[in-house]
Length: 130
Image (cartoon, rainbow, N blue to C red; front, side):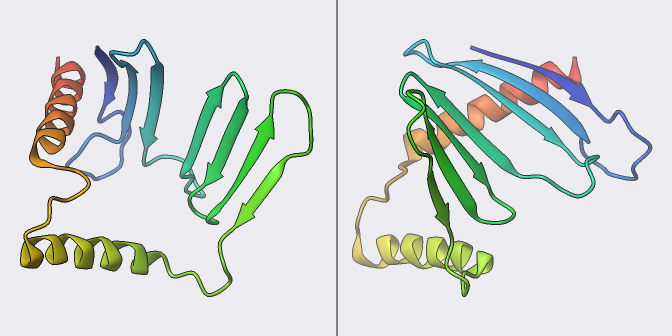
């Protein structure tokens, strides 16, 4: 299930939505929310996963993450190496995909998964446009 709200809500000169709030429920019953906007300055790109054993908080701008156990024990902190290059992630992904094509290997994310993601995106656009 997918519900979404938002649109072009600011005076920013963009040809796309500048704010979108998405709520999804997966077949397993897990609920997720996604907040996207071009308004926040400085930019924030964060991921938070909450579960019964604790939560993970990742900062995709600083390339760091931490695990905060629900039992209150010491948090675990991850920081990307000092020489981490964000662009390398995209280049590695492209190399992986081209390698799959060249060697006839099935990629981690197959066409069925890609179609499911695209259908979700189209549902979001439909909600935001209505």
